[in-house]
Image (cartoon, rainbow, N blue to C red; front, top):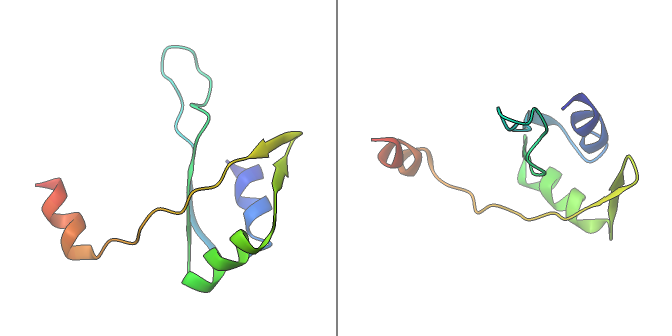
Length: 76
């Protein structure tokens, strides 16, 4: 998680980095979520053609922004 946060902080301010692990195997699940402070920080990430971390090429996807009211409704 720290390596991911450090890598992506070159593009902007990282608010949160979540790397889920499989409880049975102890290995990460090969995906993570990174939340940036501003939409511009996100755009900075996508301006770079490819991202490689520890020898692995990362496939990035942008999750649509949800409003707080939508998040609240989904958790009920």
